[in-house]
Length: 289
Ligand SMILES: NC(=O)c1ccc[n+]([C@@H]2O[C@H](COP(=O)([O-])OP(=O)(O)OC[C@H]3O[C@@H](n4cnc5c(N)ncnc54)[C@H](OP(=O)(O)O)[C@@H]3O)[C@@H](O)[C@H]2O)c1
Image (cartoon, rainbow, N blue to C red):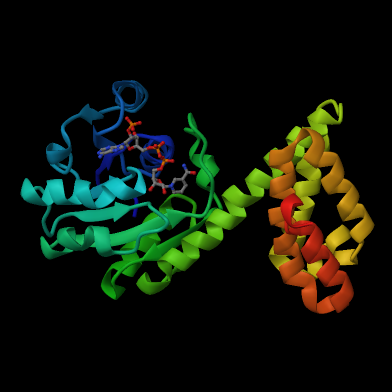
């Protein structure tokens, strides 16, 4: 959906990037509300024609309203707009919270607005403004059947790749992405700390290629693509790792145990029962040994 004019509530990490991407796609953001003074000033300075207004006035003169607040604030923002009689049939209202389907937009729908819950399956860091960061990104779309065409078109206009997720499946969908994004990131953070403790200079040289290769393999091959000492049933190596980590890096040892239990759960059928039992014992924690 290029053309038209957009309004943004929540000029944070994703909202700011979306404002730049929408402008580049021919749907300029004309009004912005919420967020910090600095975030709104950034948009006023960097994008032509942006006005800084209260939430209740953000939809005036816009046909697309993007709510990019934290997940828990979406329903409240929609409620404020509806109470101000600011939404109607001329508006398309979207939020970008992965965990939510249509529920927080329900009142906008009752006011006659078209609604869609969109979610780019990508991490967006603070300060990101380059619309190219959204090119090729898969976006979940949860929308009433009649609203799917424009929602898909909007995503496509941003260079994204839309796919439908049913309202009932939205939380499961987002739990999966949280594992793939945050949990993988947390594992890499723990590995980085351990490499620094081992005196390895510039750990990103090792970590990024290894993590990318592992993620690529697991994303396509599932559990069969996992490797490492748990998969091999190498109990001696696992015990050595835990002993070394437990001394100086107990938080990393705890993460190692948790993640290794997840690996064990995925590959247990391929291990002998004795080996799996020994790994269960090692990974249960120092107090249960
Ligand atoms: N960043 C990502 O990687 C990413 C990716 C996909 C989807 N998302 C989704 O995008 C949404 C925003 O995430 P984010 O990472 O961009 O968060 P963020 O950087 O914290 O941005 C949230 C923005 O909303 C503002 N805000 C907070 N409460 C508000 C309220 N009640 N009314 C109006 N504005 C309010 C914040 O202002 P203050 O800064 O003053 O609190 C900030 O400008 C979330 O639903 C998230 O799930 C994020």
